[in-house]
Length: 184
Image 1 (cartoon, rainbow, N blue to C red):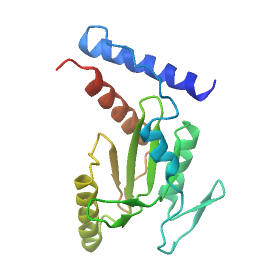
Image 2 (image 1 turned 120 degrees about the vertical axis):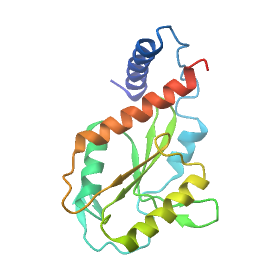
Image 3 (image 1 turned 180 degrees about the vertical axis):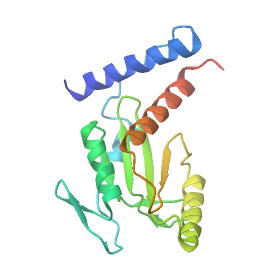
Image 4 (image 1 turned 45 degrees about the vertical axis):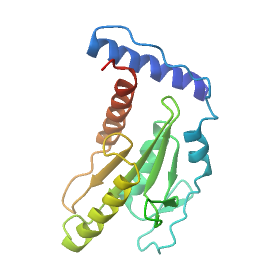
């Protein structure tokens, strides 16, 4: 199955969810600019691994070094589900600062880009201040939690549940689909 066929299959699933939720048919999504939309061009322009800050604990997965096992596991999950991603690309936020989100995903079936941050030292109050500031910069730049931005917060003793990652992405898919097609 090629990427376009996969996109069409996912869109049919989302249409079924819409019908179940709202009880009426919705307009089908067309893919006329498939592969050539502004979002796709933006995603394609991002370069993996632009973060200049030194990696302390390198974890290798698929010929790439990640800062943590959490990040390497996230990349593996995206690969297993066929979700295209860029790891630590450089983006510019509203105030001109350069940020390097852990991941930027592209869902071609809905033509949306999702910024993902995985915060791993959430029991450190100083770290949480920097997290708050980064989240603020992202939101002021148009990234909306649960719409086109996902954040994961981990503590040392908290178990990592990979299935929750794909559930969150499915929720973003459905939320974006419903917002686009609901009459109201």
